[in-house]
Length: 449
Image (tube, rainbow, N blue to C red; front, top):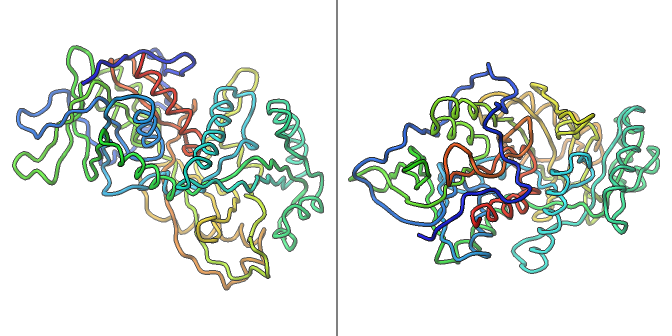
């Protein structure tokens, strides 16, 4: 194995070891199937050796793997507890590559998203496996107060964007409908809107599979699915690999993957892993630092195109959706902690033309079953906004359920101070696709220091 550094890249946010990022320290959730039960590997185990182990196979993990393979000569193994790709938040997302609903005052997340949008466009231009639908974004204000806030948001966004990339404020319902005719029959209150043409969307499932295939082409890439990580191997205060349950090894039942670096990219399960691997206060700090926020997305076949090539001109979102993203006010972090919420969103898949509508948010445990209340609420909202498209003839093709990795302090990216060579890249909530490129850049920089 090659020698790796363990320091943080400049600008990388590291969770301080002196405070607990948990928004509710008294909350103890039912544990999922990840198990971390100690530091010592079993004496008998099938062994493989790589430079870096990535725990999880979502878009964050795969983009890190991609950049390791592209930018270094290191080898990498991806370990996934599920039997295939798209088992977490990545596979259930709507695929927004948006800037308009973000707060420029949160400078770190703002710059990460800008970098992510640009990197995805570069990849799509260079590789036909990746497709960015440059359809633009449309935020809707549903009250006069939201209209005032939306006008202020447009001004702030334009101050932060390059001069050639401008958002537009739409001051009334008429101007909104002119930009998005699908809303012409809407019975919902629309007082104003805002649009940003440079925003786009990407199909999360297709993109994840394309990224995995690209990684697979490298002889320095390995992947292990259906493998639950059971142990972190620690020697001399440094991470030296992981031990995984290996259902294919009947003699030993486990596989040891030796490595100089381990990065936890397990989404909502990341805190459970880290809290079980680390002793005492170090483990307690991670116990609920990242928690699951269940979301639903509905995929519909819609026949009412009325001669249009597209169902929607733009991706659509109620402006109140932005409350789910961290804002900074007077240097204090402001984030919504509602236990249950449904905010209308709609996009059109550029893969098969289906209508994707959402979205719900529920703070809770690791339950990935369908909540019928959320499905009904999403459909009710969509019919208010898009009655001409959803006239009763639509067909529900798929209900996607994912667990967003919610952190009250935003994405946590960088080294874990308690163990040298241990890293984390998680807590991106609903922005994994957008923030994956900048997250990968930070982790790879940390690995090479």
